[in-house]
Image (cartoon, rainbow, N blue to C red; front, side):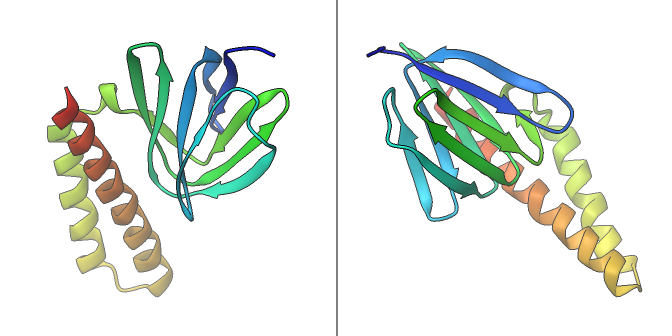
Length: 138
């Protein structure tokens, strides 16, 4: 038995994290769940939110925008549709992106384009919420 969890976080663009950690808290669609070493196997869809990587006294927060988590005897793999380290978020740029998305929703006439703009706005607002929580902790 190992006292560390092997964890990998992968997005379509790249692998964002791979290593041994104490715990990962995943924003599952049915609520957050913690994964520790030797966790029972499970597969879960994830919702947009902050994934927390805990190792010793350090905690890293990464915003994930959908995807799924796969816990196996070998560890945890999260395949995220999109992922952003919350430490790298520029709050001013995020606010500007939200305003632009709101303008796009107001200005677009096509239903498909409106749905895409609404989805983008929802993702940006979830990122803003996760960033605010992360910033309040530091």
